[in-house]
Image 1 (cartoon, rainbow, N blue to C red):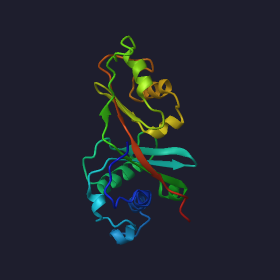
Image 2 (image 1 turned 90 degrees about the vertical axis):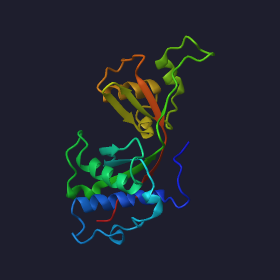
Image 3 (image 1 turned 135 degrees about the horizontal axis):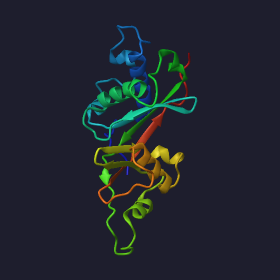
Image 4 (image 1 turned 45 degrees about the vertical axis):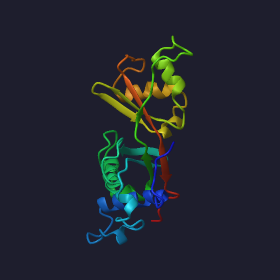
Length: 210
């Protein structure tokens, strides 16, 4: 399953557009540069950018995570979501200090567009009625395909499907996700909720020339 896009959807252009937003935010553009032509392709008024969309923007420096912020629900136009999450990834990820303008040429930007999250059904199946819900979750999750949202009361966290590259088993993936949500790695309760989603992602092909 992948996000449903209009025929004119131009996913590979999203990292370029995110970089333009980031450079503008950090002051690389002159103050007069704010038009779609200054930001480069695609034009900001393109119809597909005005459709609702949920994005995550990931910044990496030297291959290491430098910031990641996103939306789980499509609640505003894709272009607005991309702009907001790009700026937030650079300045409001609590794990990192804000990105400095001097870092721009060292960053690689990745943009993910998400499907709507759907509940993961952990109820017993006729084939395995005695399997506990957490073991069933381990069995149902698809490494490399499913992003996961974990919610328990005020505790909430998500991992994109890309995180499977570092946590290749469902046991490790869910354990670290629980820790991200400020829960113990072995925590489980019947009212813990899991939702899954899928993404399409695009990464800058190379660092921009300085």
